[in-house]
Length: 312
Image 1 (cartoon, one colour):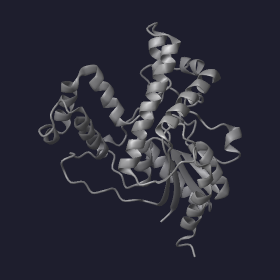
Image 2 (tube, rainbow, N blue to C red):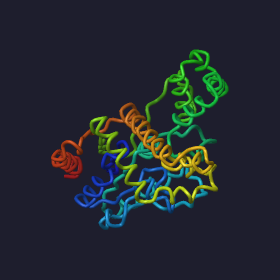
Image 3 (cartoon, rainbow, N blue to C red):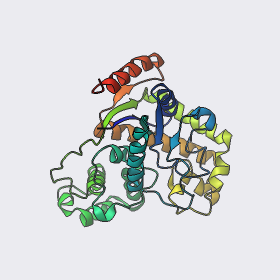
Image 4 (cartoon, helix red, strand yellow):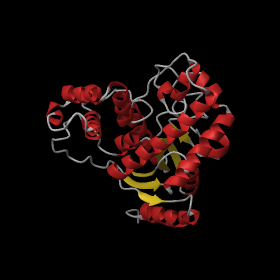
C-alpha cells in the first residue's frame, strides 16, 4: 500500500510552513487539497504558497483553472490519485495538504461521491453544510426540509423541519454517499497507508491569527484581486471566502470596512466547521505548533517510524 503523508487543519494554523519543512526532510512533493488554490490569479485570498516559501519543493494542483471554470471533488480525486502514483514511482513521498475536508477524505479513502450520476458535481469553495446553511438563512427551515423530503423522504419523515442541524446533516450524508442517513453505511476503506497530521491551537488564538491574516491580505491587495471576479459573481471561484463578501460592496450596499469584518467572521466560522469535519470524520495525529513549536521534533520522529515500518 502506497504511503501518503497528509496535513489537515483549519485556516491560518501553519499547514503550509509545516508541509514544506516535512517535504524537505522526507523527500516529498506536495499535492494541494484546497478547493480555491486551483484558480490562477487568486493568490492573496487563498494564501497560495509563494515561490520563496516553496523553497524548491514541487507543488501540484495549484493554478490549474481559469476564474470562470469549475472544479469538482471528483476531478480532484482523480488527479490527486494519479499524482500519488507518479510521486511514489519517483521514490518520493506524496504530501497532501489542505483544509477542505471532503476533498481530503475523497482522495484518501474509498469514498463514493453521491452515486455515479453525481460524480462530476461541482462543489463551491466551502463544504455542503455551508451551502445549505446559507440556503436556510435565506429561505427558512421549511424550505430546507422540503429539499430533504425530495432527496431523502425516509430521513425527512423522522426529522422535524425546525431541527436545522439534523436536516443539514442528513442532506450532507445524502450528497456525500447517495444514501439515506438512516440506512446503515459501510465505512469507507483507506486506499493508502496514510499518516494524518492535524494542526490546531487554542480557539481564541486561532481566531486572532485568522483576523491578523485577513488584515495582511487586505494590505497585500485583496480588493484588487476580488475585482477580477466582479463580473463573474455566479462563478465557483467567486463563492469562496475572501471574495464573495465583496459583492455587496460592488453593488454599493456595504462599506469596505464591513466587507473586511464579514471576511473575518466567515473565516472564523469556516475554521470551526473545518475542525468539526476533521474531528468527526478522521483521526489525525493532533499537534499544536503555534503554542508548542518544539513538538515538531516528536512529530518528525513519529513520521520517520511510520515510514520505516514495513520497509525493513
